[in-house]
Length: 341
Image (cartoon, rainbow, N blue to C red; front, side, top):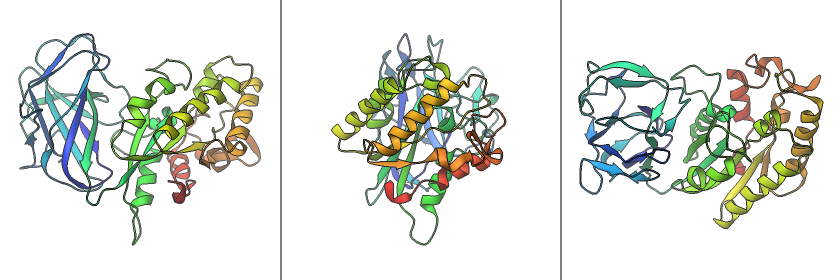
């Protein structure tokens, strides 16, 4: 599985999850290396990962585990490869359905330590068991965690392109003569809602695990809620606003800044109605004017059509009138005032 490190550092740790599994999962061999090309790991970089000093670890159903620190340095923006061997049948695989990254899989046998691509004959677009990779940065730096849905998860981008709006934001942070050393943690989940479980737990239910518990978080960005509106049947914005208030209270309880992003247009998408548009406008008005969030990023104004503000601007529309084109994802990143992070 290939993942990109936003910050450079050393002593990387791997977090494996069996949160949604039904039975314990045993990982008999785990390695961490630097991505070469395809299924290849750069020669000489594939290092064994241990858990409490052991190369094998069993994770009970509903649990997760951090590895020991792995020796070696990681460069900012570097693509890492996490290879795992799981013997036998697994009942209920925890993973990320739309990774927009190629995962390479082997037939029977343990190939985790291999750096060549010979043993890997299948591919997937999902991540399996891998929850996160944390890199120790010196001096210590903070991270920005983004709670989102498919607009943050990356729907519309090509596999392995790393062109989510959060990827573009990371490039902005890293650019120039005085780059900001902030990690970007993408907690986007396609189809996710703030209030109800649909594709995975609701945003409120997963906020602690996916955002607040992330290492080094100092700022949270919430860009979620359009699925609550487009797929829901609410009579007003109040339920969604109450949901945002719960997220704000949880972030403030951990002394974290929380930034609210306005919801972007979706006129022309199959589920759009005038009533749903009315609720979107109510939500955005509250985000902009209530003062409940510590700061606001106005994504709606950034990507809407100035001549028809209920719609995405044509250049930013991926074609379904909800998701962003590459230019739209870049525009979202450009709309973030870096000082709010």
